[in-house]
Amino acid sequence: MERDDKFLRDFVALTITTMTVVTANDSDTEIKEVQLIRQMAIKLGQDLQTFDRMVREEFESQSDLREVAERVSKENEEYRTEIMKACTAVALADGVVTRKEVEFLMALADAIGIETTQVVMMLLRLVQAEGRVKIED
Image 1 (spheres, one colour):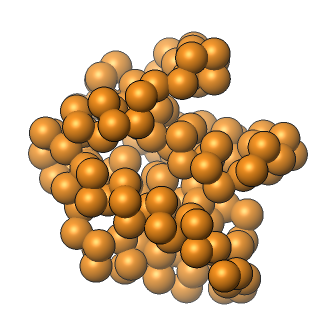
Image 2 (cartoon, helix red, strand yellow):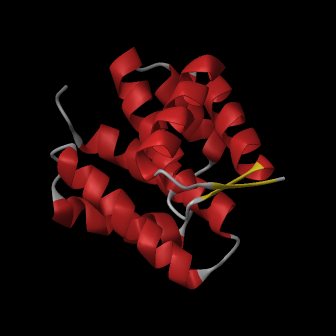
């Protein structure tokens, strides 16, 4: 998949939004999760200077989640799946899964046109890879 600024903008907007939902303003966790998002961007072949600029811009003026989700929902399945995988990884980055995180991920999946069973499988694969994950209600 060709990665362009549009993909990176959507990737940053939705992963940073996921991070803000799941971290509850914990700055230590936010730093770790931004590093994780950065590593995922590297694996996806993204330009890091552009990535860093977009992250700064996203923190300064957060994107409208509904607008971004609507835009992403119109993209192909690979595009949507890559972004959803990244958001799922961000939610699980602290080793804890909460009801609020799962509800957010399911709502996001619905908004961008990803089947909920696909998100459940993403979560299960991450839990399996991590080994120990705490589940909180």
